Image (cartoon, rainbow, N blue to C red; front, side, top):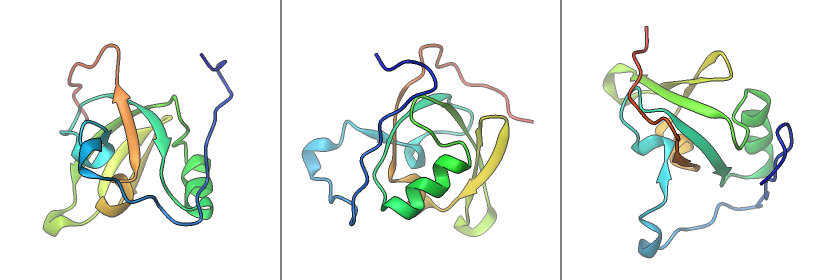
Length: 108
C-alpha cells in the first residue's frame, strides 16, 4: 500500500499498445455516467500525464464521469473537487480500479 499523498507513475515516451488479453482493464472512457472509480494509472507520454496530474488526475484519486458533450465531444469528469473535460482518446489511457463504494452517484 502506498501512503496517502504519494504515488507512483511510470512515464513512457510512447503509449503502450494494449493487446486483447488486457480487456479486463477498465478505463475512464468505458465508465457509465456517475460510476465512481479510483484512478489506477496513466498510460500517456510524460508531458500529458504531468498536466493531468496537475489537474487532479493522480493515481489513488476518486474520479466520477459526467455527461458527454453533444456530437461525441469531450466528457466531463469530476476529480478532486473540480470538473475537467477530457477527449475520449485521453480518457481511454487513464486506467481505473473499482471504487470500494461503487454505487452510481447523482451529478448535478
